[in-house]
Length: 326
Image (cartoon, rainbow, N blue to C red; front, side, top):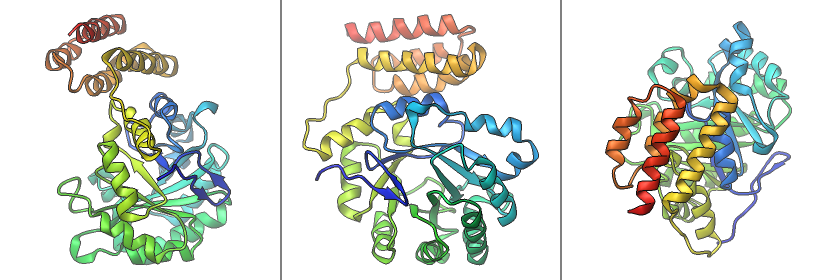
């Protein structure tokens, strides 16, 4: 199969691979790295509609963007149609696409009535989409799960409501809220949703290898795939999936290439957030970059003991140099 160019309202993507919005992960430096590997669309971290309205300055930090990551999608979460409508007006010009989160299973989000809790009230789903659609004229999408629990799976109903209220595309992670990330994502549900909707359907869930990505396209007929946890420390998952789709050989990166990417990530993070935050946040990313390499467990332990950013950089250089020699 050849790479397609999904269209979301007026927005045409260069590739059918989307970076999932992930709290604590998809900040600007991370998105810029993933974009260079071929992501057709990247998303902000989840942005609280309530937080945006009540404490706009602090929450707007999540909306920092750079031209080289465009198109840039912003994901809002909340449970009040008017609050979400107001938030949509506030961020309308900050990105090229707006998404409403209706699938997050995290307890803090669900307790507030947002995320996957919305799936328990399809009437509210419709009112939220209607209100935001009136406030925002650009490409508008939602991300959902199969339902609150297996006995109340209602992704087909929610998809139809979304389409009727003017949503331009739906992303389905085919697990229920009660499943969390356990078990397996039921990709057949993505195919079912694709069969009943006339708008683009994007698939999410359990894409960890290029073959996974290819299989999701073939099994579901989805218009694009969304990569989340599989991309941790592995932006090559995007480029390798595109290579596989286009009949090119899939080549695993050498430690030297992983090191160069990791250093670029550190540099971008420092430019955006400064030394202290980079030291604290890049530890987890470096642990992911090191997965599968000899001595990675010792490297991970040493990372947690680093006190300065120069020390972290030196430790990273030493580890990947050793890996190259091995």
